[in-house]
Length: 417
Image (cartoon, rainbow, N blue to C red; front, side):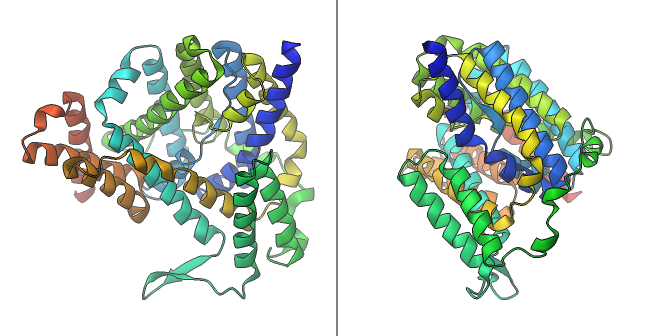
């Protein structure tokens, strides 16, 4: 009864990752995309992504808009680089095209080989810290302060208590391997927020009056107009870089786990094509989510698993009115928690060799402090090339890496003009 096992794995995968519909739409809302439209876009991108993976990739890998990359979309491309969300969606489409070209050639391996592992891991850690820095104020735990920049909010605020209680519950459920742990935490946090009165204007919540009209103003609204060629190139290259690094590693790991490494090329191609559809639907790029492991552990081995998950995502369209009721206090703990899950990557950084360790540290520190993934990566890459030349080890750096570093130098130069 292999098909029954695949069906079960698809259901398990769905409940492990369905929280992304709420969390991703919340981050998209910070970019200016109406939350209702963001929910629909996330559902459609996830459903189509999983179906593409199942039909073309024939793998049990789940594709949904990724955490970290969605933060890059909102807080770097829109807030940091001054793009409109429509222009940022244009960057997503271009990155998807670049990723697709890479996935059908040998460029993925060449690009990954050109970037030192310590810098790749540092990017993951830096993005994790940025998620924490986004989650804490979103949950009301920290607030702006003139003297210290940020300060702890009073515990008299019920929203703070709800955020911290939900964070604690999230960690406990995860450590005890409770199925659907993040979804359970969001539901519990939502209930607690309404119970203690932490949601402003709770009586006027939009849950019963969901409108599809807003999505018509988001679907297919990506544009390249109004963005300079260099800014567009830097943004597209940086987003493509992050997408390739994250997905090549995750797709390979999941296929090794499922025992189907020969499906790597087609799975990566399905992943890449789905990124293009994300720009069309109106959301940040899809990634091969880590929650795929839950479905594989439940017996998922073929594309039927991801097809089932994709169908279940489509079914959530009937529950859209309920999803708008979820408050920030239930979403913020998930951002903080996922940021914490990205910290183990720091163990792979060579801090004993300072010409390698310091650039990695710069990426880790500057991504959250500059509130820009692109600028943080740029500082790390430029310093890595510079330090290797300074200590006489320039030949250890691949020519492609020097080219990337020069592009980032140009990015900073143009910012000063």
